[in-house]
Length: 462
Image (cartoon, rainbow, N blue to C red):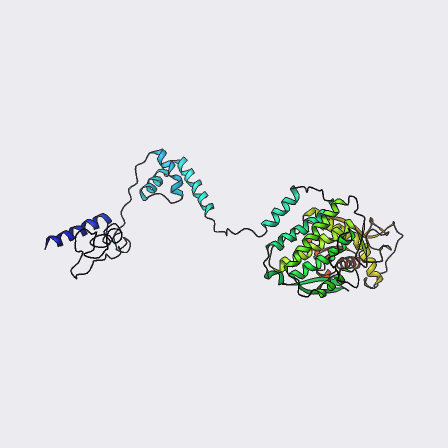
């Protein structure tokens, strides 16, 4: 054996001792010095230790990967706990809970908490805290977060110019719909949407898109805008009548291209203008707003538009698979109250059209006098009770008439009782739930109950 070979053998033994096994990263990667700074890693290269680095075959020796203890069949070494003072062990509890201690420290901590009750309690508390930090739930934001934040802002931050109480539901619902539209992508504006309502005792529908729904809201809200002295969004487009469906169809036909997301800007500007102008009108809630075949006072027209905005926002949300909550309870209560006040007129219109229950003859009573009544009980959000006069001779001009002289609801003349969830009743009044399918608790005159449920569905329109 030459001195050179003996030196190489000694070097290999030293490297093995340092690394705990052959080929460990702690030994020389390439004989003759490390390849990189100051050396080539090739036998005879500059910057080496002067050794040729050649083995028996004349080539450079490249160490094989180290074999793990588990794969090599060797026994695992026993971990000897470190000897540490109490305050040191206490300070290591957090690192131990995160599995960040060395083996010796972890063994020392685990031995200590077996004897120290205080440290054992603290270790358990820290381990439970770590499990909370490693929850498997998604970190994506809740899609409904924007709606909840917006609702909170609307409830807590008063506007600079006070909005009349009767206009706040419209203000809130247009703001919620605007937040939904902000979140959808360009392609979503062309997603198909089917508008649904109830007509002639049967379901009716019209196919459009998300942008088409917003165009519909733009044109019908325009009736309120015109009453307030604002510009008509129809522009030069002439509709055959002021009926909401006629205005919408005329607007759609006059569009050279299907509506796109560009319709959001005029709708948003108009809704802001309506709220702003209503805030300056003072006590002008009684101003009439014409819908073509009937009129509503401004305060009720704003409630009607808030109701339709919510209903169509749900249509859009369903089409684009977006979560959408019902209105605030106080706003929902006012929408239900408007529908309850419109029911006597709807019942009278159905009688005149021959759509009332066959064989039932109303016992018409003089205006202002009590007559047969149905108790409408609304449960849940926005709930309450209303006595609906069934045989009112007033409000016969249209299903939308409100406040016309007629019979008065009376508990002494109650013949039926209907209980419905608030949101369910609103969807019935929107034509989204068939009267026969309305989940209602019923007691009393079945014909009267049927007439009221169908009258509620007849309040809907496109």
